Image (cartoon, rainbow, N blue to C red):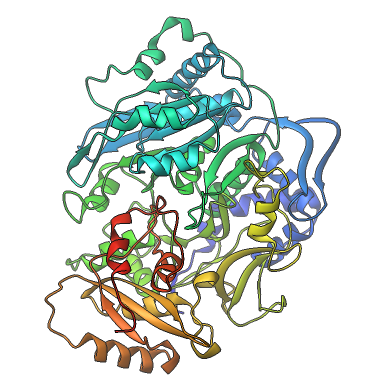
Length: 638
């Protein structure tokens, strides 16, 4: 892999990671010769490492009698910071400065700015309203909302009083919302009136009566999409004197539930993955400050919705006193330059998006200009693997002196296993390395470490593992999800390989790995190879099962369906010579669209189920559920 960027010694010494390492070396009276040595120490000493995060970030952790930083049991039920109290919101609560906290920009170009002192006033008022309505510690508050400031404020107000938060973005269909929220039995549902996407206005809350009836009749709190004439119920609460009395945060057990996130599976109801106050707090501080190098003067624009874990991660920038930009709408409306323009207009210093967004910018970039986003210190990519070509495009055209952090983790851990390391070089196509305290490895099918491509695993517990799955009293779903393949080892479901540079390359989901002739092939290899063909807008590879083998089937979405090329011959020949005969698809189909999740991931497993006539129950996790109709009509054997 090509080296794209290497930080100078001067820059390295200015990073939060270098300063933390110096703090740790002084505390321990020892030296770490490189990042790998530091990483190994954090894995061998989990209690001491995570305690050092508490100390370094001045977290108010109340240690009670019989406190223990790390109580080792089985992986799934090991306990961090037993007998201690805190509140995720504490660090934000202390910041009553006039510094910018949130900048909102809607697709309709309406904008709003909120400083920290105003943010805390609104959170204080809304949390008082919650209490006034009888909501107490442990009750569930849910939001069916666009990516607007009220969504962030509602979440933090819930955290302040120990209520449990969960959210679905406004583009979720009614049934998808019911499938998720009905499992939580919420006491309060917060909903807006409309949102914009691709130039259209969607009045999404018109089925509120149906929702209420299926969610055990919760209280309803209405807000409105940001505008000059916002007279919503929630807006009035912020300004009512009866809710203005300043109240303290509730001190909560370290592992008290903070929020519930949902799996995007295609069978049965989505799993309700529950994360705690303390684990989420420590992981996000570590990842944002030490790995992403966020400082108080930074401003992060991350293209996400509140239905994706990257929203939760983005909100945690507020813990560091930095600011966030909330954009709600299509990243490419009214034109392909929307993301670039918003980044410039807001003076953002960090840009985050799904890999598909960067690929779309790359495929439509017509200018010869270089370094067009000079203020960006770090590009963050996730959702699916970022190809080497897109790495090079970002480095060449967007900013040659910026870090490119491809990160990978997920809803399951509301954080990352692998991510950026600001003291190390950036190589095209590679995730830089493992996160501190994340004891990852690559295993073969026999559960042994391998230098070849294999299963991503984690061998040691970490604080942001789920505290439990909601309604999973015996923890059967929890244990089955991560510990079925290798006893007492977290199996994450990614098909990866470690590189000679110490980084990682992800080849796709291990449960979506192709297996023609008994040879395992990651779909990412095929996608990366096909990026050369600019007439391919998107593609999806999956397996068709025969009696004793699996055949690769490739689906293509073309930029122009009238393209006059013999794509069958061209692509099969290219894949054969570039990769191997095993990578050559048995059949290739042109389709109108590729099914994808709301976080932008192609739904390979869902398509595999459809073409193999397996049962598919849950389409609510798809951004474009109508796309599957076409696949159901395809006769694979014709």
